Length: 239
Ligand code: ZN
Ligand code: FE
Image (tube, rainbow, N blue to C red; front, side, top):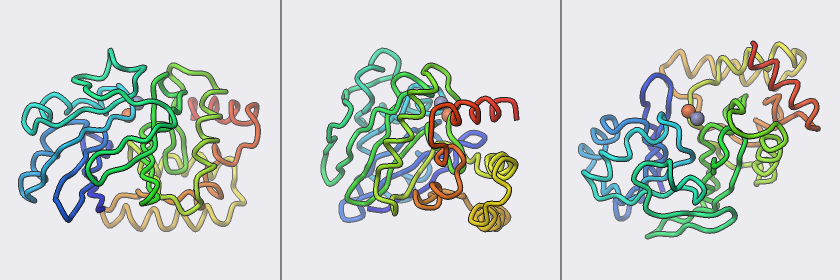
């Protein structure tokens, strides 16, 4: 299973999960169709599944066009069946979604939106976290509560520490400034920031990141209680 990172819109990432034996693929959160189509066409990929983490336009904007062009199946959370465009298959918390050689466990992780989910490809140790967990940050709380977001992050923290995290946006550098402001003695954070800047300087994405590193460096994952977490989330909203 190979992951191709595709930059979309301003700072979004969509991901192609490619089974190289069959060239079948899933796309996670296609913000727009064009960059996905370009890659799929030039690499002779069979785009079969569209996986959506949540209903926001910058995560589903390509659904309609991709479904029409490739007859791909759209997979999303049952609770969002009325607001994910072209949804076909409804998935539920803690259930396994399995098609062809693709197999992911669904985690309902509300907070950013009520119906936000993550797709955990547990055999490959990769999780697609949309706008819930970013590298060195977490999503804004639009529909849920602080408590929901805190608990959603807790579910991700419980995964194996070598899990790779693929998030919805390239926000890492901005996020790192916030972490550094409130966690200025963190040596691991400083080392990570050096690596981040190096990648960005070379035009490379800072994703995927690894759970073990995030647990040491991401101030939102380091927060041990809801009070601390909520305070940090408020500070970040006004940062
Ligand atoms: Zn969003
Ligand atoms: Fe987004």
